[in-house]
Length: 636
Image 1 (tube, rainbow, N blue to C red):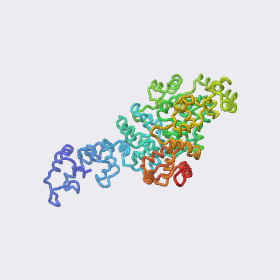
Image 2: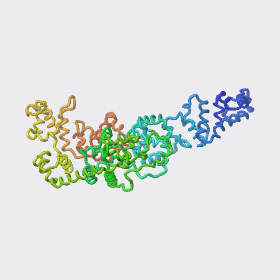
Image 3: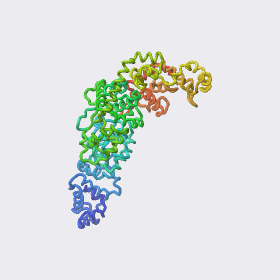
Image 4: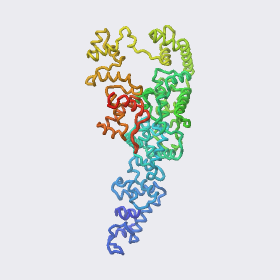
């Protein structure tokens, strides 16, 4: 400390803080070195030759080092740093060691506390400025990877609700950002690396943007303290769930349709028209995997974010304790099917770690549950209404109902029991064989079967879904005006006649003719698009392709996507593969992403942190099937 005082502190500041006689004795430029006889040109870079110089150095250093703690000492040092440099930002955390060889960890902490106002938000978290002893990172890469395995991509709901402001930042958008930020304290991990470690559903840019918004809040210091406490807790305690493993599980078999219907029958829950089932499956996926519900595989009937937000609140209010328990058991059975027997479905760190902090969001534990249950059973849009009446956020109400669902009212229970009895009678009166005969063999409509059996069309619709009998669309009833596929291909594809022309000839509307083309899987002619014959050939070939490839054969470029995917696998990265194939990296990435979307499963594990790109087990099967079908000459 004395070195910097003697070498850098301006005279005006020194005169303000040191007694006048000592200051003037030190500033007397006529003093000469007793050893050299020359004026001191670099004061502070060798042993002071005079008692006055030593007095100045020691007095200023002790004004900092005698403070009662790290942060008061940091405040005292901050004034010295600002006097030495016009801008505090000119001094960084990385330059601390240049202030003296072998300075102690305590003095390093004082320097970091002094620099706190000039640090970026990520540095503020990284150096743990809110703790008693800020420090530069000590955790290894392996330590941070281990911490990441304990964190769900969608941060624990009660924590997200407490750390999210009621307005400005939506809790769902903030959840993966908080998960990534939890890898920053005491680590050298970048924001991009952190986002990748917790599931790669967002990028470092998004983390940085929302981090800046958190930094602008008056609660920022307490938010950073919460992250520090939680990081310390995860590092010191073993957690019961390995989310690193959960994120890689195959969820395509989660909550099959038959199991959903069975659960609904057992719990007296109306199964709905299909959307309710998709919501239940998506929420169960998020609870198990820790990933966003929108990331569920297409096989699960996953919903996009807008649809999920619009419908999941209603499902939350409709849940009963019986339904929640049944879904919990279904989740445990799913984990057991993947040889995971020692983990709960979900877990969260204790919110007692947040004690004493002033945080922007409400505490879900303070929601009046009896009043909440009353409200959600009385209103058509109960979650939003309950949040308004109880003076809290929608997310707090959602979490409270997920953890403590409202019991069904007696009226609802009676209606469910009555519906269950009707369905049971329908199963006995119209078993699967009878339904198949009436609907498929005799080609009767649901309305006709309803008149014949006395059950409503909605009950028969649910019965058909339960039996796995596909229902006919409107176009399937026009048997009298059926259009043969071969004729339509000859007239529309080969002779290039228009749909209106063909419709006039057969006495139907152009829209109905277009529906027949759709039924026969004949692609309509695009404007300026690929060859009609090429598109048709792809559709025809899909029927003859191995089952594993059929979902990917959805257009004229399908074979090219499969061929390039298979050719890319021997290379270390997508960029390297694209260079070898003579195409741009973004083109190859887009084609692989399209394949993964069509097939509903990941095909490759992207290269990262020194690990080369490699196919998933499913990707290897797809590549092998594609190579067999395409052949050595590159033609299908």
